[in-house]
Length: 80
Image (cartoon, rainbow, N blue to C red; front, side, top):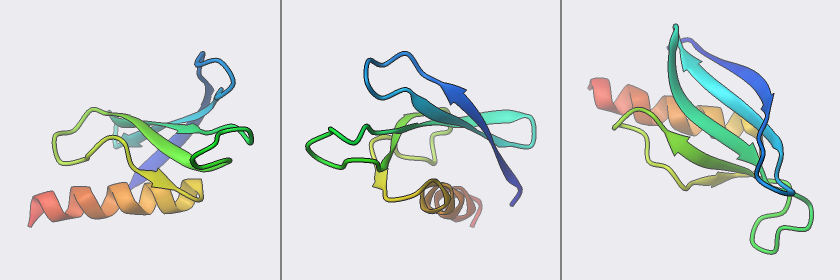
């Protein structure tokens, strides 16, 4: 499955680095990189919003690549 990211800035206070995740021309998720001062998961990627019912919001991944892989797995599972 072809997923593409587009880097964006997100107005969430200290957590501003973000990525939109697209499947073809369809937006499926918004990921936000947590700040280094975040007490729970510093510098990790948080799935802020999902726009596909197969993808669960709220997950945390140590890297953007791992976050995308997790979303890809959820989308692939929905097709099965």
